[in-house]
Length: 135
Image (cartoon, rainbow, N blue to C red; front, side, top):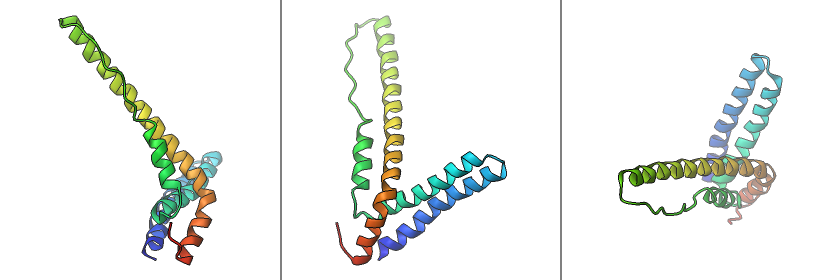
């Protein structure tokens, strides 16, 4: 019962944000962006609700896709000179930026996939919650 109330409140806030962005796009005359924001508001509601209800696979799916972005980059061999140390630092910085970009891309992809799938999973999740069936 408590999870259901939280899912309605937090999911409703996420949906309200998407709908508010859609209304502001409509006021500015951009109908295509408004439709996209309205659809994303509904997807945000179902996604947040599925994560809070925690009686489905959406949370595990998003976590697994998030983990794809955290990779172990190779170690570096360098020589102990000024040029070697400068090369080491620049390549380490480059690998750090590459890892950060990969983690962010995997995170965006995980949220997108979770939001799309939650549109289909949410009705089953809310029925399971009303019936008291725990995962």
